[in-house]
Amino acid sequence: AKTDALLEELEAYLDTEHPRVMIDKEQVIPEWVVQRLFDMGVMGMTVPESHGGLGLGVASYNRVLEAIGRRCGSTAVMVSAHQSIGCKALMLFGTEDQKNRFLPLVAREKLSGFCLSEPQVGSDAAGQQTRCEWNEEEQVYILNGEKKWITSGALSGLLTVMANQQVTDPKTGKTKKGVTALIVTPDMEGVRFFQKNRSKAGIRGTWQARITFENVRVPKENLLHREGQGLKVALTCLNYGRCTLSAGVTGAAKQAAEQSTKWVATRYQFQRPLADFELVQKRIAEMHAYCYAMDAMLYSVCGMLDRHDRDIMVETAACKYFCSEEGWNVIDSAMQIMGGEGYVTENEFERLWRDNRIHRIVEGSNEVMQSFIFAYGGKQLAEYMLGVLNTVQWSDDETVGENVSRILSGAFKPQTIKAGTPLATEIFLGVKKSKPAVSRVHPSLRSFAERLAGHVQTHTREFKLASKRLEEKIVTAQVVQARLADNAVLMFAWSCVLAKLDQQLARNASGPEWERDKRAGLHFMHLAHERIEAKVRGLNKNSDDSMRRAAEAALGWVETLPNEAFYIHE
Image (tube, rainbow, N blue to C red; front, side, top):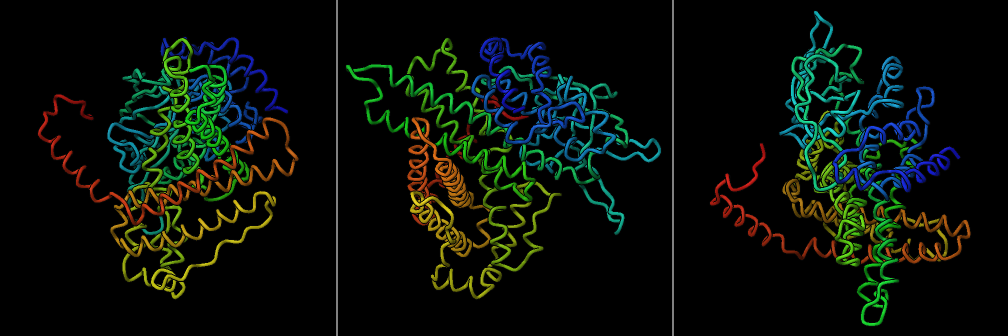
């Protein structure tokens, strides 16, 4: 009831007062808009009521983000960055004193920022150059470095900063490098915002700051969690950030699908509505199929977060990857269907298009997500295969890249691949394991469930065969990793779609909306089946070798061109 009341008030405001066109044109979200969102409780949705927030769960929070994402990408990103990563570390890892000091502030008054990226650090979080050193005499951390791409950074009253630190193990006395999370406020001496924003193609109303820290003295009581445990803090926060990113793009994709469907039903060419043409129907069917699957996956993962399920990094990564990829495809298809009218600014659709391209890049690029899903998703299977738990144990002290490299290099050595009779009979003698059992699914869906079980069986075997064939080379065989990761994500989406359809059937859903949902869900499973089979074929018959040679030739050619003629990273 609380969420419904908030949505009713918020949607009325967004549809009648929110200056979304002005936000995009002038590249700023006005202070009065931010304050209005604070007053409604939107900016403190997930903060406990005891600390001034609404205390909403993850699913409710994402319903709100989806509603905002339909209307204004800039506002959706600002709200998401504030609560999903900006102050989320404080909520999850903060002491009671820290929560009492800072949560009321971020729930009612001030934005917050998450400081992880640096000029030389994107996906490689452990490669940070920002550092902090403990000063025993002053009882403070001395913070030095620079951060980049900090959403709302220059407008924030609280910053969660990740910094490298030499940490001493109290048991062994040995010192090693780790990442430490600190709470920093912009009024601390030595904090400087030397770039408040950069003009962007989309989400133009959001501001991304560059910040320098010069001998900033951070008091001991501002340490978040424990020294050297900052990567755990960051990765946990990203679970939530990847979910809310998915909610924003899901809302935008639904809006695009609805707008373009109405367009083809009313736009005539050759004395017929566009909806009569089969190639248009193909796009319409695919858009609604993927929107249904995005919704099913998003709220399945929201449920995991609300239940506090353990170890769901693969699921949140899959959600971010799937929703950002397919959400963009839906919006781009809608643009194609609407033609020139979609491309002009007056219809506002092109803003939706621009705003949602960024999601395939941020919160971990989708290429990184593919390798992460492959490596971490295959971790349990690798443990079974190899019996080397310590070798393939995921470490919160390492980045995604470091974990992927270490796990795969240890997991696929020839001598370990042959471990275990069951494994040997499967990958050396071709004996397949049985399909996973399917139970408790509506009779009308059983054939789809059985087909999914068959894909799971094949996927497990192909994973093992790829590891046998490539051995240590699988560490760098990213196109193989991507095929297997893509299929894992499609199977996860398939299972979410089955679950959602099953629930709707159990509730005796009816009417035009249910007919659309049913047909969209069934069509998604047909599409997923085709894509999975194609990826499996691609594991053995592909153009990977010619791709490498073509890339090598292009890279050799570009070396002959002068650097000054191009944009080069700093």
